[in-house]
Length: 128
Image (cartoon, rainbow, N blue to C red; front, side, top):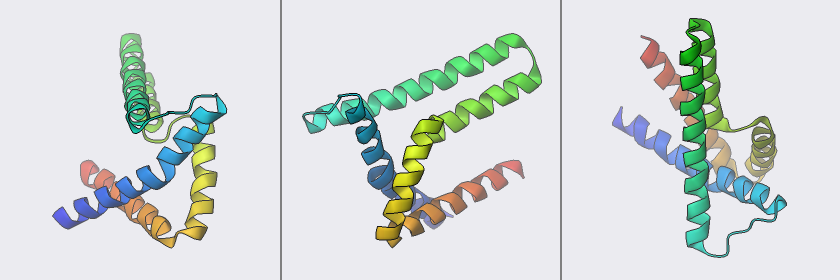
């Protein structure tokens, strides 16, 4: 099991570094924001993570305030998915970049499959 977790982390790290980060900075560049130093780049990545977490927390609070269990479940799922994949525009850009990169880098395609399989196994284990 520890090996599965290690492989999952390695696959996730590879996808993050080779797919998410380049797409993230490409999107920022479209808005005229380009980090000038590694410290600025790291700061922007941390800020994006904090914004996603804050959004997920706020969405969950709003759903809980409604008292509707189905709405709460929907909002939690939407918040979780948003945290995982971002907006649809983000997802489209990442998907295109990933497809192009998978053709050029089979190791990334393999990492994506391993990561997806590990995530599926984790979900199934939580349901048991």
